Image (cartoon, rainbow, N blue to C red):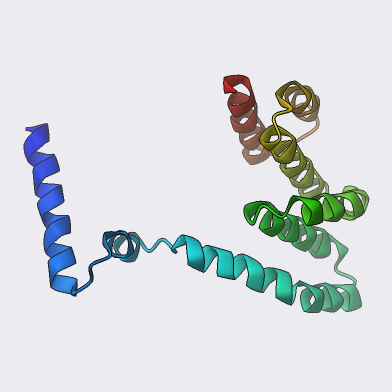
Length: 157
């Protein structure tokens, strides 16, 4: 029964590929699931980085410090996704004190990204120790789950 279901799904996908006059199966799957391609994501990250100074200036004029802290986290996430670790470390260094003062959730998100970098560079024990110290401080289940996922990844390594 399962083999028949898998076969039907594969046939459906093949028909979609033939009908759409596209040879790129990945773009078909992405169009069906509405997921952006890797290139589209990278372009969005670069676009966000390019647009960030305008957003930051606007938020500064509005004195919306909490949102500015969130935007700094988003900027750091863009650098992380693009593997631009030097820029990321610099952003974390200047954004962390600001976020700690104006938006605790953004501050903890920055700390989690900082640990992701440490994990990516193979410093698993250091990452685990820092993440364990973060768990009692965060108040959000979503942030706790992010920490636990990163912890699992670090332990697995």
